[in-house]
Image 1 (tube, rainbow, N blue to C red):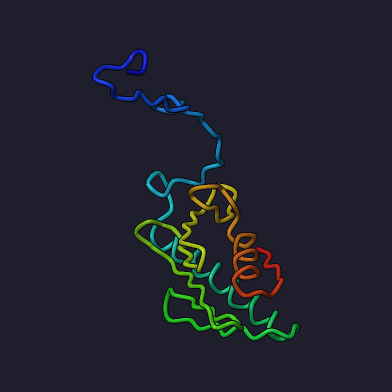
Image 2: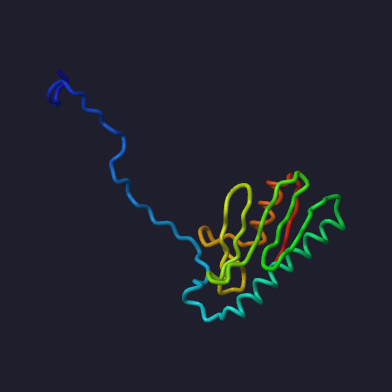
Length: 147
């Protein structure tokens, strides 16, 4: 029998103690929609500006570069079909006061920050920088969108 055990059962020692220690990480947080003074109408105007800007930027990229992004818009939903036929979808969620992005790599939520930029609610990344990375990675075409 192994020392320190009863009835011949083996005592396995796990290399970690449970629960693991919590390590706080500071993440820049966007303006909380619940505490927002922004009305739904104001949010929809800002969301419309962002979607129109993304649509225009991709149109410019299509005109100036040898790319073929198929951009279509129905209401608050902007669908981008990439040259490899994969899609990225951006839409506004008025009830949450957020822009949502659906990409092959996952879903992302962006809220309007106090500085006027759209920031990821999890990691604080800026919308246009994140879209540049997502579109470049998913579509295999290097590009940069600027706010």
